[in-house]
Structures are given as structure tokens and as C-alpha cells.
Image (cartoon, rainbow, N blue to C red; front, side, top):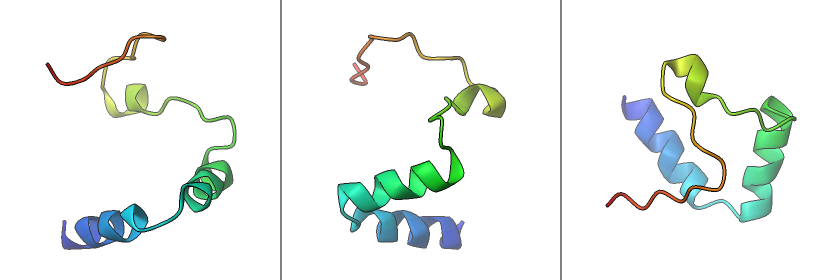
Amino acid sequence: MERAITREKQLKRWHRQWKINLINESNPPWAYLAVGLGLPPLELGVVRNGS
């Protein structure tokens, strides 16, 4: 858990383009990965704001 939090804090400091490059390296088609984790797919075009 500690490593994950440290990594998240590191990524938050990165520039947007660096984050995009990281995604392109590990998930080039930008496939939605949540379904593989057992989460429901998001509906395209729906904005979720937590309310």
C-alpha cells in the first residue's frame, strides 16, 4: 500500500504529456481496464461527478 501511495504522489507531479506517454507505453489502444478488475463499464459520454 505504501508503494502505491508513493507512486501516485510521484505521478501527480508529472506533466500531462509524461502521463500520456506512460499510458501509451503500457496500454497503446487506451483500452478501458476497469472491466477486467470486476468493475462495471462506464457509459460513454456520461460525466460522473460523485453526486
